[in-house]
Length: 66
Image (tube, rainbow, N blue to C red; front, side, top):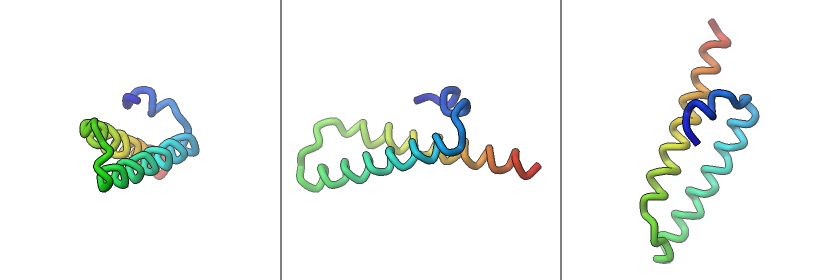
Protein backbone atom coordinates (compact mmCIF):
# COMPACT_ATOMS: atom_id res chain seq x y z
CA UNK A 1 0.00 0.00 0.00
CA UNK A 2 1.29 3.44 -0.78
CA UNK A 3 1.02 6.50 1.43
CA UNK A 4 -1.73 8.11 -0.64
CA UNK A 5 -4.00 5.11 -0.10
CA UNK A 6 -3.16 4.95 3.59
CA UNK A 7 -4.00 8.63 4.16
CA UNK A 8 -7.57 8.04 2.97
CA UNK A 9 -8.15 5.38 5.65
CA UNK A 10 -9.61 6.08 9.06
CA UNK A 11 -7.60 5.75 12.25
CA UNK A 12 -9.34 2.47 13.12
CA UNK A 13 -8.58 1.02 9.68
CA UNK A 14 -4.94 2.04 9.96
CA UNK A 15 -4.63 0.43 13.38
CA UNK A 16 -6.15 -2.78 12.01
CA UNK A 17 -3.76 -2.79 9.04
CA UNK A 18 -0.85 -2.08 11.40
CA UNK A 19 -1.79 -5.06 13.55
CA UNK A 20 -1.97 -7.31 10.46
CA UNK A 21 1.44 -6.13 9.23
CA UNK A 22 3.00 -6.78 12.63
CA UNK A 23 1.56 -10.31 12.61
CA UNK A 24 3.01 -10.87 9.13
CA UNK A 25 6.41 -9.66 10.33
CA UNK A 26 6.30 -11.93 13.37
CA UNK A 27 5.37 -14.92 11.22
CA UNK A 28 8.21 -14.13 8.82
CA UNK A 29 10.64 -13.98 11.72
CA UNK A 30 9.53 -17.44 12.84
CA UNK A 31 9.89 -18.76 9.30
CA UNK A 32 13.34 -17.19 9.12
CA UNK A 33 14.38 -19.08 12.22
CA UNK A 34 13.21 -22.29 10.56
CA UNK A 35 14.98 -21.46 7.28
CA UNK A 36 11.70 -21.44 5.36
CA UNK A 37 11.94 -17.92 3.92
CA UNK A 38 12.85 -17.59 0.27
CA UNK A 39 12.04 -13.90 -0.33
CA UNK A 40 14.06 -11.70 2.02
CA UNK A 41 12.77 -8.52 0.37
CA UNK A 42 9.43 -9.15 2.04
CA UNK A 43 10.97 -8.14 5.40
CA UNK A 44 11.94 -4.77 3.97
CA UNK A 45 8.51 -4.20 2.45
CA UNK A 46 6.63 -5.06 5.64
CA UNK A 47 8.88 -2.89 7.80
CA UNK A 48 8.37 0.03 5.41
CA UNK A 49 4.60 -0.47 5.50
CA UNK A 50 4.66 -0.44 9.30
CA UNK A 51 6.75 2.75 9.33
CA UNK A 52 4.43 4.47 6.85
CA UNK A 53 1.34 3.54 8.86
CA UNK A 54 2.91 4.77 12.10
CA UNK A 55 3.92 8.02 10.42
CA UNK A 56 0.42 8.64 9.08
CA UNK A 57 -1.14 7.82 12.46
CA UNK A 58 1.21 10.34 14.09
CA UNK A 59 0.28 12.96 11.47
CA UNK A 60 -3.41 12.41 12.17
CA UNK A 61 -2.80 12.85 15.92
CA UNK A 62 -0.87 16.11 15.48
CA UNK A 63 -3.46 17.51 13.09
CA UNK A 64 -6.17 16.74 15.65
CA UNK A 65 -4.25 18.55 18.40
CA UNK A 66 -3.70 21.69 16.34
